[in-house]
Length: 441
Image 1 (cartoon, helix red, strand yellow):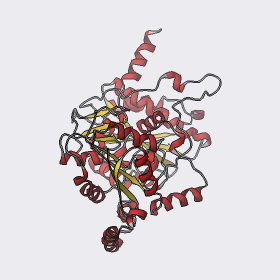
Image 2 (image 1 turned 120 degrees about the horizontal axis):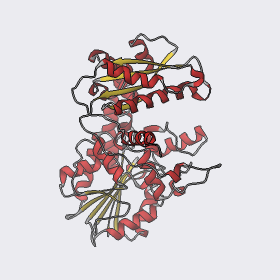
Image 3 (image 1 turned 135 degrees about the vertical axis):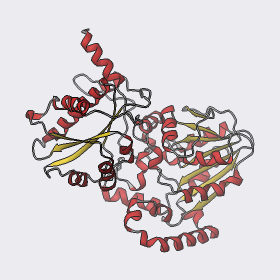
Image 4 (image 1 turned 135 degrees about the horizontal axis):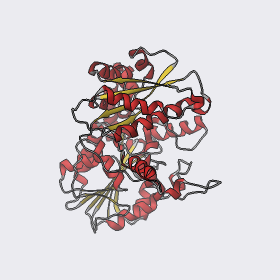
């Protein structure tokens, strides 16, 4: 193998996405070398569709965040290169966008070779405002931001799929970990769900869409149901409930589907403590806990019956299972049915209300089905309590409400109070959006 190819492969493998930068300034000559690498990238018909604007002015960076709705991490980078794409030519098969992407990759590799760190992000909502802010002609579109700086720390390399999973010769061969199209979890395996969460759901905390009031209400209800002794929160996703439980009991164990899911939760969930009681493993590691909690995960599992049996077998004699899940005969179930009816498809959509697809496939249950499954799994003293007849807690947490409907806040508070009154009548036990089941072994 030629020594140049060995050096190139080392650069490719060792490049990391850097988000923590030192205060060391980047000279303009260095920036020009990085841009020079970008302009030598291949482009469709050599049209060189790119335009680069290097930003080192804090006021302009704040303008990109405020007007373009870009991620706040932009402020952490000494220099941000805004990459624009000429949208007036080579639109077939996104050839112009492909060309700019090749330039960004060149610049990222050159930055690493010069001792800098770079992070390629597309985290902004209004590219048109960024274009106007920087006085760029309207034939261009802000495509990406490249954050540059000297790294303060370098993360470990994330895992990569084996080459036999991504490389096929002559025709495609089905892979056992390919994600099914169906939104029905029974069509998935646990391994596929795990792979999906590792790739698609790596920013779990952002996709939970559960506000603190709802979390606190659920935790207040279950706190007296928890048995004394070892507590296991099984298959945590974002860790938002686990973080809350850690404030109640410092000895709580948290088990994620994988190490990657655990690391993502630690990165994005405020208050989640990293300790030796958290682990990622696909089978229950903690033997005979006295309480197993399972928050909003049953609806995503390939087999609800098998899942409840696993929990029952793992519990200590006299232990308590706490299952929090969504109800099919509720406003949420109605929304689900209308969504599928309107879109006439049953695959995972990236536009589903409140981001359930970010966690994986889903199928809600009813309180009657849930009670039957718990008894069948061998549980005793099964009790099911319902909450949230109205979708108030979800609506006030959406961006649309925060931006345009805040004037409805007084009405929402009234409905929320009414919701709590209805909960006391027992009607929510049948029609509430959230079901909280407790059962004894």
